[in-house]
Amino acid sequence: MTGSAISRDAASRLASYIEDRRHDIVASVVRSSVLPRPGSPAATAFANAFLDRLCQEHEIADRDIVDVWADAAARPEEAFEHARIIVIGCAVISSAYVADCGRSDEVVSYLALRSGELERRLRLDRLEQVERPLDHTKLVDRDEVVASLLSAIEARDAATCEHSRAVGMWCGRIAKTIGLGAQDQALAALAGTLHDVGKIATPSDILLKPGPLEADEWEAMRAHAQIGAKMLDRIPSLREVSHLVRSHHERMDGTGYPDGLTAGSIPLLARVVSVADSFHAMISKRPYREALSVPFALDELRGGIGTQWDGTVVNAMFDIVQPRGAIRELRAVRGAGG
Image (tube, rainbow, N blue to C red; front, side):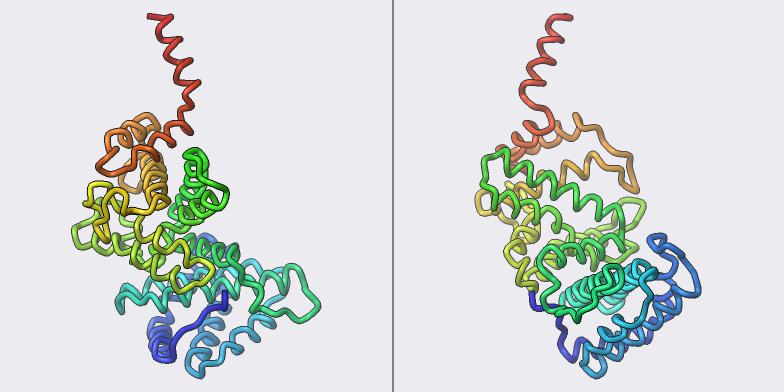
């Protein structure tokens, strides 16, 4: 992982945009319920100071401006709040920029990674009070990048972040159940955890809409698979899962998106993510409906075998959720009672 980077042209456009939208960005950040003191003058002052330095960094192409400021800006007891303000601020800028200026994988990727770098810097320098100088080019390994991306997702929508973590867990278990090795199990869990990372760039009015989406809104929502894949492809330590994230909404019958792949042309681990994603989405509460029951979700998976989902993967989910021994025992009890 070589750290965040952005071209001069993109940086200049981003700096101009931040200045134009500064008031709205700061207001959105300091209202966040994730902060220890939402709406406080101190949070507002820090958010404005961060935007000042971020714009300067872009205008003169000197990332030391923000790094040096971050090293001196906070007392240890303020580290958590300041780290959250930076993460939330970058997520708000990313979402607003895409909504107002159109898709920019470069800007979205940069902001997600930069927020992770700065959050890590603040936490290490303040909470651990490291006395010796730190080589921050060595701090952001794959786990740290994943954590920063999840933080950016959480800043947009806590429910999407919770869903991402759960899907990662299910994917690891499914991969193990179908007999894949430890490396593929870990890769499946990683792909599941990051499958919705492209939603960092989904406009908030679509991502958080309390009712069904319109046709044009669905198009914007569906773009998250391609956006996420492009983001991850720009990150060397996560590049190996980019094609899995791109393909997790493909269907066995070829009617999925974005590429209309069919059956065996869909990567196996993407088929795993598809089942885990769908199952957890069904059993989770949504803004427009209550959570569906586990038996209903399993019936839906069974009914989609061969059209939407891979039968081997669906059967693995059944084995996890309803172990065969438990099913046989339940049938025996029912038979005895009949």
